Amino acid sequence: MIQSSLFISIVLILFFSIRADAQSTQPLVNHQILSSNITSSGQQHFYFNPSTTPGLTKRSLLTLTDSDHAPWTKRDPTLTFYLTLTSCSQPSPPPNYQGEIPSIDLYLSTVNSNTLPGPTHHQNNNTVDDTLPGRISWHGNNVPELWIGVAAPTLTAAWTGQWTYELAISTQQWMHPLDQRNDTMRLEDTDTTNALLVTDQTMPNATVLITQGLPKELKYSYCAAKSYQVAGQSINTTTEMQRGQQVFMVANLTQEQTYQAYMIQHQTAQITSLTAPLALQTKSDPHCRLIHGLDFCSDVAYSVPSDPTQDIWNITRAYDKQAQDLFAPFATALSQFNCNNTQYSLVRNCDDCYRDYKRWLCAVTIPRCTSSSSPSTLVTTRTVAAQSARNPWIDATYSLQNGWTELLPCVDVCYQVVQSCPPFLQFNCPEGDLAAQQYGYWKTIVNDSLVLDVNNPTCNRVGMNVSLLVISAGSTLRSSSWLVFLASLAATLVSIDAFN
Ligand SMILES: *[C@@H]1O[C@H](CO)[C@@H](O)[C@H](O)[C@H]1NC(C)=O
Ligand SMILES: *[C@@H]1O[C@H](CO)[C@@H](O)[C@H](O)[C@H]1NC(C)=O
Ligand SMILES: *[C@@H]1O[C@H](CO)[C@@H](O)[C@H](O)[C@H]1NC(C)=O
Ligand SMILES: *[C@@H]1O[C@H](CO)[C@@H](O)[C@H](O)[C@H]1NC(C)=O
Ligand SMILES: *[C@@H]1O[C@H](CO)[C@@H](O)[C@H](O)[C@H]1NC(C)=O
Ligand SMILES: *[C@@H]1O[C@H](CO)[C@@H](O)[C@H](O)[C@H]1NC(C)=O
Ligand SMILES: *[C@@H]1O[C@H](CO)[C@@H](O)[C@H](O)[C@H]1NC(C)=O
Ligand SMILES: *[C@@H]1O[C@H](CO)[C@@H](O)[C@H](O)[C@H]1NC(C)=O
Ligand SMILES: *[C@@H]1O[C@H](CO)[C@@H](O)[C@H](O)[C@H]1NC(C)=O
Ligand SMILES: *[C@@H]1O[C@H](CO)[C@@H](O)[C@H](O)[C@H]1NC(C)=O
Image (cartoon, rainbow, N blue to C red; front, side, top):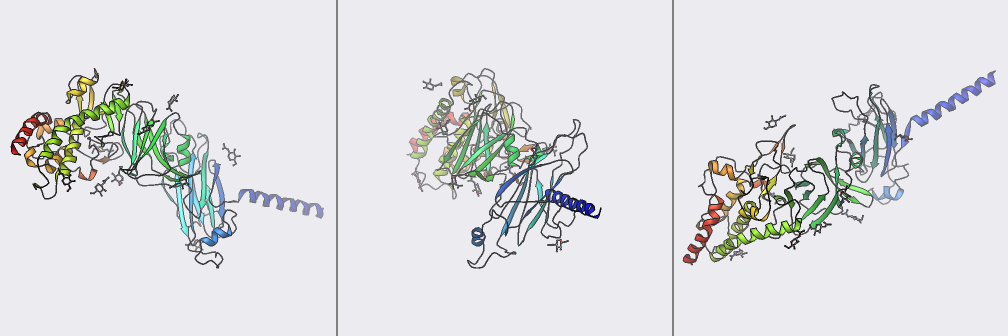
């Protein structure tokens, strides 16, 4: 009897210790991503001890210390831990649920008096950054070992599914990197099936991930983004060495859809950078075609009115050539005026005039085409009826039977010419009603219902530095339309000839 009860006790002890083991903590391997899943009210525990973790070899530990001889000490201040938790999927709420889907939480402990940190063990005194939807991060040093708890909120029975997540720790870098800047990548424009994205520096090993329908709670999670990746699109990545840009032309999108684009950099299998998502909408009007890479109007990278079926490189070349042809008389005029020796401004010279006039000419001869429905009246558009383009070449070259909508050039594009060019050119910008018909004004607004920024412009800046777009309505400059100016150019040329 005594024997059998002892036997039962031993069995019970064994049972509980095995159970406790299975339930307690799982080691994390340095620099390796662990995938797991968790249901409502669940808790899972992990630990990381660099001195016993197989992933961190003695050699790598030594290289991280100051001295070659000193063994790694438990409180090595030079050893930083980078810990991240990303949610890859989340449960589905009941049909009438309105709010956000709650996130799983991360709890930390650095003391072995609390090896199971979690909502019921409130000894966690390490705070984690959970401000970004889908990604929780923590980094710290001077930590001997780390006890980690992952806990899921309690849901009612009406919810279905579970959370899946990735957890990773590294002593070298973020295993789920995130570039939190919102201006690393910019959207130039879209048309019905393409989107043009650029960065203002070259990005080695970079590509773009296009997603659709990603829940907002998982926005900053790479594993979630991957599972919402849109199939079938093709991305042509080019490095523009001279401009110091990375250009991503995304093709094969579907018209009138909203997507989120991420830029990713990778080194072999590992990603080294992920940008914040950038929203893009494809257009509805197939007459708007996205062009870029023009030789002359090199700042043009937007949609233009044209035929839906014509070859895009033919359209690109044709627009560029007509702009260059119109520029020729101006270039001649400027070269005949000995403007380098005729100082007309303390801060500008003929190079500025050439550059700014060229930008203005490209803006007015290569209009930017947009969707007819604008998110706001601050977006300055003009409805162009069939056969009434400002530039008659467009109507002569392309059949635009149903008209189209123009995103007007920013008025600053015009004012820059006035400021940069010698007065004898008599270049003026319109004012009042005429200005409002021909030009738009740069505005930025970011709130819950409206985003107007460099990716969603209110006017066509044609590559002009955003910091120069400061002119607002109500300026006083003499009136003259650009057509009047083009018509008077010949006369001006004559007077220059007389001048020389
Ligand atoms: C959840 O995780 C367990 C253990 O890691 C695994 O066996 C199971 O297949 C996972 N379930 C789902 C739905 O991913
Ligand atoms: C964290 O909590 C433990 C136990 O409550 C305590 O001993 C330790 O000093 C705390 N650490 C810090 C950095 O506050
Ligand atoms: C980026 O964020 C800053 C600060 O929140 C904001 O002022 C700026 O307009 C944003 N830029 C873009 C391109 O969204
Ligand atoms: C575009 O999508 C279609 C249908 O999804 C597919 O057949 C085609 O291969 C894709 N083209 C490219 C260039 O990826
Ligand atoms: C990719 O873009 C470059 C230049 O922008 C172009 O020359 C090339 O033909 C494109 N490749 C494809 C497959 O579209
Ligand atoms: C680009 O990828 C290659 C091969 O994966 C790698 O050797 C190289 O270091 C990477 N470059 C950068 C800057 O990440
Ligand atoms: C492109 O232009 C060339 C020369 O003008 C013409 O021969 C060719 O048919 C055009 N291609 C398309 C697809 O329109
Ligand atoms: C004016 O001078 C600049 C350098 O100061 C030079 O690059 C430019 O070619 C000159 N322009 C003319 C028209 O001589
Ligand atoms: C966003 O800004 C616009 C323009 O200022 C304003 O009309 C609108 O009410 C704002 N919306 C919210 C939700 O703040
Ligand atoms: C735009 O102008 C600002 C301020 O003058 C400058 O710091 C920035 O580098 C410029 N950006 C580009 C892309 O030239």
